[in-house]
Structure formats: structure tokens, C-alpha cells
Image (cartoon, rainbow, N blue to C red; front, top):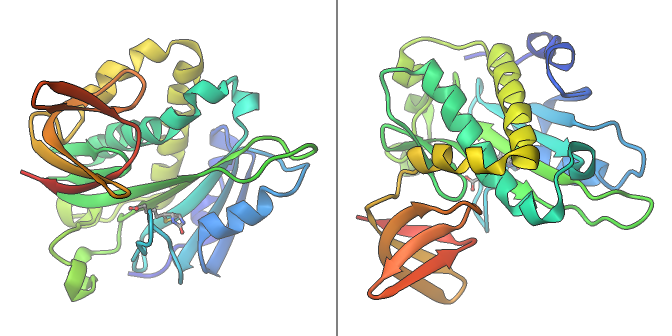
Length: 265
Ligand code: BTN
């Protein structure tokens, strides 16, 4: 697969709410570059930083993000104040992004099961196809509050070429659907759906919860969630209205606002 080219994304700023797209043939991490840009007081947002090749892609915690040529790896810098998103709903931006990915990717691979593995992974037929890393850059006048939403999607980077140690854990859309996709069209669809969903988060958040509950991969499963030193084990009851994972632990119903899914059975 050949790496992505800037021409593929030429119409994204015309066709979506994105104001600027910064394309890099080679970059360490689009999130690192976005955190750097987010220090500028006058930045035109929403802004996308997109890399054809990432050499130091980061996942949550100490995880790295592997992606071969043909993967879609980018970060979106948002200004929640300009989108009427109060600080109380910022923690839900990751789950709204996950829901958006599920909705858009499901249309690309209609015969497959596309599920949100709370809090930030999207799985197709049980294998990871996309990951989300939301970071909050420091903000103090004159720099407004911003969010960096990093997204990596295995699109045309066939998972047959993935390193041995991760090959059985992931997949790519081209492997599932049997054909290459247009990364530019996919990014346009994602941005349009995301702007709709973020508008709903600002105006009518209650319409989103049933949709993220419907695509939750963990509901009804026994899960182990690691939160620092704490390990929570119980049956997942789904994702609550505020984006928290609900876990039934004996007679207690616990709400989790973050953590790593250590085990699912
Ligand atoms: C995870 O699975 O833990 C999240 C992975 C997020 C990867 C994306 S790729 C684009 C952006 N830049 C990064 O360095 N990471 C995110």
C-alpha cells in the first residue's frame, strides 16, 4: 500500500466543519504536534493534523500505536467554547467520538459487527480497528481551552503486514470489506458526523446515550477494569448517560469514568 497523499484530503476543509488541515508525510505523533499548536493563542480551529506516516504514535498510558502505510492517523484540535460545550460534558467527547466512529465505520463494512469497546477503542468482529486518545492541553489566558482528539484507524493498512505480537488483536477495514477505501471520503464523513454528534452533545445530549449503549461491546460481559492500583471486576451494565461505564459488583453498582479494560469474558 502506498502512503496517503495531501491531494486525497483537499476538499475536507470545504466539505466539513474543519477550518484547516495540516498534512505531514512523516511525523512523530499527530497528538504531540497538536499539543504544541494548541499553545498558540490565535489558532484557527477546528484544525486537523494528519500524518501519512507516524514514527512515534501514542496510545493511552504507555501504549504505542502501530500503523502501516494506508492507515488514517490524525488529531483534531477543538475549542469546546466555540462549540457551546460546557466543561461538564468535555469528559463525554471521547465516547461521542467512539460512537461517531462506530456509526461511520459500520456503514463501510455493513456485514460486520462494529462495537465500541469503552472507553476508546472500536472493534470490528471482535478485533481492534481504531483507537482514540483525547488530551487536554494547558490553557490560560490568552490561550483558550482546547481538546486534542487523536484518532487512528486501520483503513488500507492490511493487518497481514502487522508485527507478529499484535497481529491477532487487530484488523483493518480493507481486510474486513475486501477492498480499499477512500481515506479522504472517510475523513469527510467522520468529521460531518462528529460535528452533528457534538452539536447534539451541546443541545440534546439525551439523544446520544441510547446510541452509545446500542454499540457497547462490553454490555452483559464480565469485565476487569484497571484504575491505577484498583481492579474492578463485575458484570458490565452498559454505558451510562454521562459516558461512565456501569459495572455491577455483587450488590454494588459502580460507575467508572476511566480505566483500562484488562479482561473481558
Ligand atoms: C489507543 O488505542 O490507546 C489510542 C490510540 C490513538 C492513536 C492515534 S493515531 C493519531 C493520534 N496520534 C497519536 O500519537 N495517537 C493518536
